[in-house]
Image (cartoon, rainbow, N blue to C red; front, side):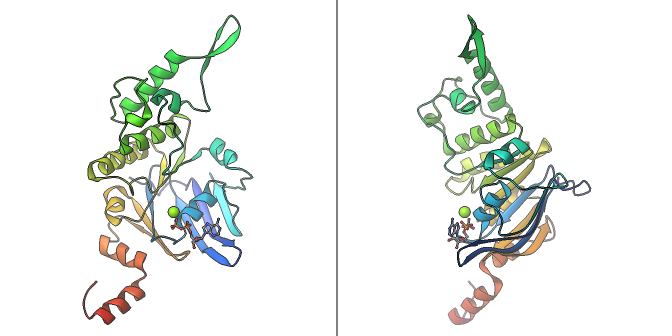
Length: 263
Ligand SMILES: Nc1ncnc2c1ncn2[C@@H]1O[C@H](COP(=O)(O)OP(=O)(O)O)[C@@H](O)[C@H]1O
Ligand SMILES: [Mg+2]
């Protein structure tokens, strides 16, 4: 459960992002607390990805401030955000299917051990950590050498999430992790999100699926054409209202009118 009594780990205040004449974000304020699953909802083009890319140092905001652990922050590079503990799992996952789960898990962070004074990739260490971390997330690998390409889509998402957590994520951003998955795979990923949140990590879960959001979300922020009406807590808002906010209430009412019924 979100502990909104504590200080937010990240505060994005009045963020604007313009791409030439396109205003992707028109002043969005969002706070994220440790241990909460904060859902960012919105239709295609609403500005969700732009918002989290601003949070993770990929984009500089055109206007607005970012505070991380209470201090003003300006990332020059996504690597600065990663070392601060802001990790993003994108849908494409950046994994190599033919390589083992363990190799993918440690890609870019290869553990080494010295043999005759020379560093060698430490298979045993990498393998045992990978097996343990995956087991903690509820996935029993056949072995650490199992190729990532043989895992299901949901399991692959879980590898990417477990990897980010192992390497010290304090804020874990998931950009549409469930949008390409079937029902069972989706529920596996939602269970993984729940486990991550229980460790006190802040999860920012982007989705355009209200049901997925309602299943795990503690708080909900809806973006609509680069704007938001604010954040609602679980219990304050229902699925229909969220859906309505995503579509833009007015447009839906107009459509209902012209179709002469309920959409
Ligand atoms: N790098 C970019 N250059 C120009 N326009 C962009 C860029 N990234 C996003 N946009 C525009 O900003 C708006 C929001 O996009 P995006 O953040 O990807 O939305 P979402 O993730 O909610 O689908 C869209 O109109 C999109 O075309
Ligand atoms: Mg997007």
